[in-house]
Image (cartoon, rainbow, N blue to C red; front, side, top):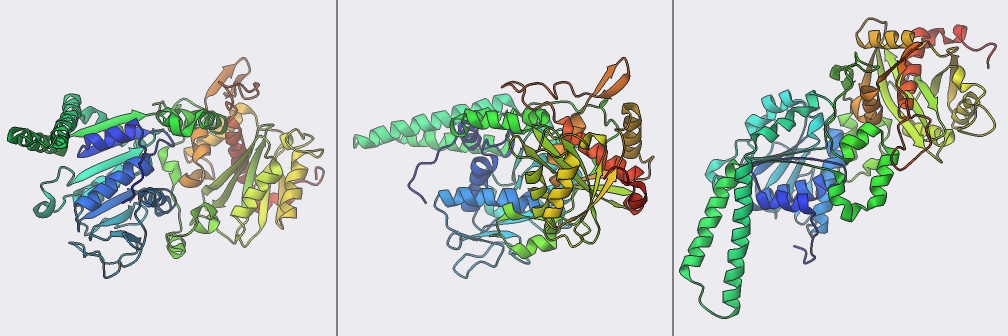
Length: 541
């Protein structure tokens, strides 16, 4: 379409040239997984199998709207494909478009191409979104969040393709799986494809691709001289193409890449910024793409995968349409928020990072609905501004602010007043009512460890659960928090938390977020909001 040259880095070029029927790419952030690996894969399939149906599998509809689909469309736009001319999203295509071989029942979650090909957005938080589909290819995005059992039972059986139409193509019935490195055993299901890859077959494919290029160069050179191309050379090229197609049709290609593979485009400053802004665990897995082990003997050793949940209001997201600016999403997209109930918060205060962890108790659950943090020059006023902007549509503008003695008499993160004063002041400035609940001195280390791990095990009144998409960094920090043992017992391992910054060690204090969660849980468990007026602050506030 476009006459402009398109840059692909080495991982992106190799993925396209090898063209395996099953491709698994585990790569760090900003390596162009969606933009330059998924987008060519989907485009190739839709262009070269006219009228086919493919599936784009995402963990949640919200993720598809905010990450996967925008990435695909942005890449296609750069390559000259125009929405409304070459494809439409989420609506019935114009009459000028060709018909799909198997038309969908409705087009609300469908990308339609001008040649009749369609891609159905299959979100795992929509039950039955794979039902009655006959697919010729699958793209599985953010695989570390995909429920493999659901994928295996509901979606993979649909990827049988229409062999009578597309059986000659090596990419019929193809699947591409994309993710950064997982941090949990459940999210690691796709790592085992590494053992399925035949390294010798992949090398043979690479050699065949090179030989095809070399043969085409010879033919071009002969044509340039105005000479007749020998028949054996044309026959050789056709044989190479047939062999390549056969090899690709059975090939499994697995690769792991760090974000540094895309350094030429990202620049060193991006890598340095990510090292500064991300938790060490997030940086290891999402940027360096390193396999790491979860701290099974860590401070939160009783936390399990079942303590995470997805809760997106798909009806509200449907109402926004695909052209909405999803960077502006707020709490109306969250199905776990009770807009008529107060929001409980715990906080942590540090010279370099400040956290809010927000939750709402419901029956015997404490739903951790979202966490916020600000870095460096952004302080508590900016943090509370972020919170209030996100919950601007919340009807009950009451915050139950749990805090202990560490919030009193300290001011290194703000101005002349202590943290408690600034928090109350900023919320009231935004029109919220604050119910401060004082927890006293920080709970003893061993007592806190026992309380919270019993909570995860279901042995306390409230069990904590985390909204997965709204607490990404907090969940990682909790999963990686270790235990440090000393003469006076043990505590959460905070070694390095207060160290001076350096290029190599900027953010090892990320246990601050877990401390904010601790405060929230202790407050909700020990000082329920209904008792807060009688238990709080007469002599303190």
